[in-house]
Amino acid sequence: QVQLVESGGGLVQTGGSLRLSCAASGSIFSINRMGWYRQAPGKEREMVATITNSGRTNTLDFVKGRFTISRASAKNTVYLQMNSLKPEDTAVYYCNLYQIGATYWGQGTQVTVSS
Image (tube, rainbow, N blue to C red; front, side, top):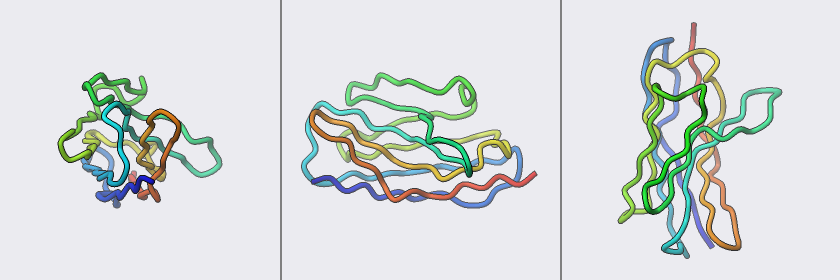
């Protein structure tokens, strides 16, 4: 079993910054992919950014240049640095870990960007 614990959400004004963190623990394989997804009210959950254990990243076009995903592999921790935040970024952000045989989700952290 794997547990994901997120932190770092909150309320910020347009143009502000937040940094999300997610620490994974439990039965984690050496080959895996961690990432962040978000779900706004009335919308489907969407991928924001992912990063593999080897450091390969994939980022949603809408946030490229504003959001940066990184990870401290030794600690199985993933970060999402969010800059130049917009009201459209308001959502619940979920940490995700995928490894062969299973996908795990965190409990979600609310990010609210006021205009």
